[in-house]
Length: 78
Image (cartoon, rainbow, N blue to C red; front, side, top):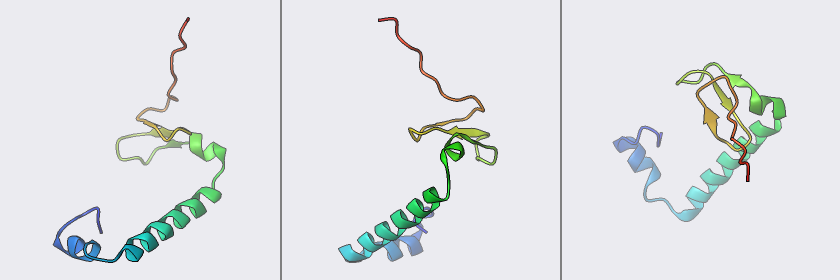
């Protein structure tokens, strides 16, 4: 709902006590960690062909590349 942020979302997510927000944060964190537990390192390097902006590789740093080639950095000669 917050992704839409219309009036109903604003009313639902504003004005609650701190415990309400911490509970949502903790539930979201647990769900995320549970999903990560289901996946291995190969998943991190897999090409996501369904990504909205085209095929993407998710690398361990959390960066994404709108390409099927991994992101690399040039090594300096110093």
